[in-house]
Image (tube, rainbow, N blue to C red):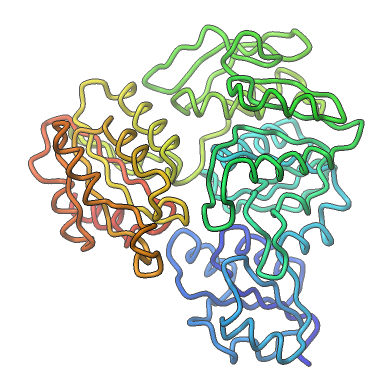
Length: 464
């Protein structure tokens, strides 16, 4: 058996896995990690923390480990999974590790939903920090200007992104069922994760189970702009509040004004107090994220002036409509959008922010839902908001049966028939050429992928 102080992370390049590995190392534990792919910003983050990424997956990577944390992307047949079982090495999942080491001693605020989890969790963490509450947090991305998306925190509150995806190959429950919430912030529910859920009804069941874990002195904050969430409020065993842009919501925004610098609005809290807010973020979907964070912060006892301070200090999250370049009439944004609703929100926001600009969008079908044809029609409809659309190749297309695979060629033809310029290129250099070819004087390029997109962003920036 290896050194029981040594913990090996299988799948260490996952955003949450990398943050947890870095925290354990900061606590004096020996940490190692492996993955089959690494790219910035996570690879740079791990390097800065002194954690080497061993690749590819192989039995030797586990030599000297006393236990293993197995990421949910790994399954039977993976050489490290098989080695762990053969050696009878103690193992656990990341959600269970977090619960045992941290969350059981805290008041977790679990931010859940199909869209907006990362930005909302980060905004909530910033508000709690600005209020001097020294919160813990686990964010599924790296907030702009922060060195890490993870902190154990000295205070009682812990803001955590709650994912409905399954925990591990040996634990098929959603991750968020491990987090023992004191409060749940629910942004929205749509169909996603087609590899583990057959229909939307199955997803509703899991969110219902999350809500049933709330204590009577807890709180459920629900997006009041989403009518399909109304019935969940009735299931709450505790206080329930709504938030959104709807004036009927308990916490809502009024007098919203989008400016070149961001947004300004009047925030009405659940207790009736009103205050003026400013944010550098942009768009209705980002505004809802901020309002949701404010609703959760109010439950945590944060005063209105501190909520305002936190919202103003929050600069967003990397790869969430992140501006990477602006010069000579060209803007380049990097975005995580990987669902038709998110694509539509991203493109709509850019249309409003740059009403006179030509909009070129690059999209990589990568998630387990988007590589399938479940959203065949919706993907094309959401991309019609762009003037030029360039698809990257379908991620691991060979693993998806042809009859289930997204038909990108058909979407390209439909977009062309609708008067849009549309292309499909698996080669990233060719894709970059087409994205930047013959752009007008004022243009916006947005890259949308929940992966590295083969380094497309870096290639574009190198050409400028």
